Length: 205
Image (cartoon, rainbow, N blue to C red; front, side, top):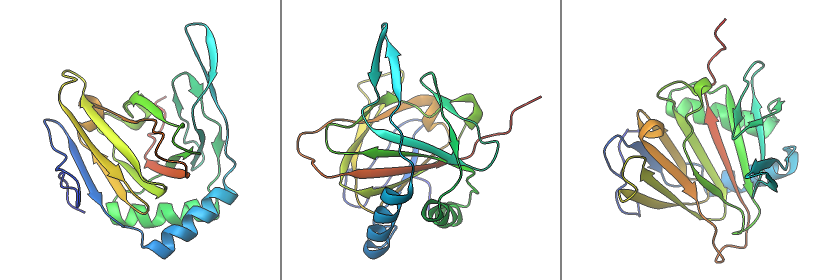
């Protein structure tokens, strides 16, 4: 998989500090269908909550954190409970690690139940991921729009669709210089699962 930003059937995803690549149908249709069914059934999905402006609200999606022992992770004030790999997710971890050339030790899985579920503008820039993390996101299920914008210039934006079986890899300065999100849409009624594989660095003494 080459670094760059050329998407097979979307506009080129390119910009200063943006290092991304997408492989359409990286997981063949039959494999993607089986993976969606198995991950849906075996993963212990959780509903988390965040507090903003003194109000406690449900995160607009289900998620779960999986990884090797010691792969501790938190975001938006949520300390994620570490779950062991399930068979299907571990198998996908092996395939993605081989394709990308990085041995991932953890994954954040998001389940978008329909178009009302989303994730807001953010970057995967937590300290435990290191200064230039490699994030490999495997999409299963419904097609959803994926948008990015520069941190220092919101007018500089890119977008693409993420489809069933697609593999998106972000690396380099992408998390430091760009934000990304999956917006809500009334056009989507089916579920999507995103498996974002990462490397959590060991805690320093």
